[in-house]
Amino acid sequence: MNGKTTYHQQVSYCGKQRCRKCREGIGHGPYWYAYSTENGRTTRTYIGKNLPPGLQVLLESPSPPDNLEPVALRIRTLGQFQLERQSNQEWQTVTDAVWQHQRVRALLACLLSNPGRKLGREQVMDALWPDADIETASSRLDRTVYSLRQLLEPALSRPASSHLLRMEREGLLLAEQSQIWVDADAFEALLNQARTTGDPGSREKLLEEASVLYGG
Image 1 (cartoon, rainbow, N blue to C red):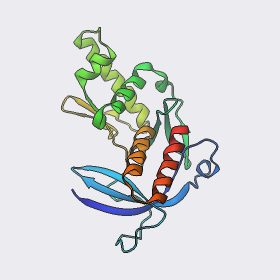
Image 2: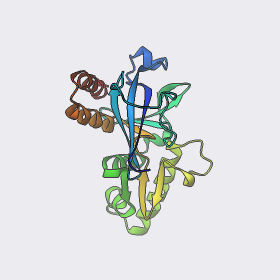
Image 3: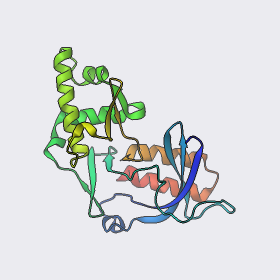
């Protein structure tokens, strides 16, 4: 639904290996966030530990809105290129053999670096296999997509049913930030919020969070 905004308290995780709170699943906060939906895309905006006076919100739920699925994966690009999954309330770096395949990592990187996290098949084939003929490149892309889907959702019995990496109109679409969290996108969002907020306390908190991400 366009124009819908809800407010929720959430614990945040900096992801730093030395952070005891994150390592033990405690996290930081909780902090208030606003979830806004516009044209089918949901964005999260940091508010702070306290809500502005007089703001009418739903206080019952500390979790994200019902129309959001929990974050399935975390990807770190500010430094080493890492994929993380949650296990027993702890985020662990993926070391699967598939992750070591150059083309699988390259496909994921291409999608992450493109606006909207989507690319046409021909764009991907030109980027990853520029010297191959169309038939060969198409076959290689299909195999690479299959491998990446297995990596993103190893529990799927049918990788083609993946909701994190979908095929739409001869294009590939990777799930958005609410499902696949990327540190670079979170870093940019925090900086943008810091620039626009008029509250010095909120600005300081936002910049601190951004600094942790960049230094992580």
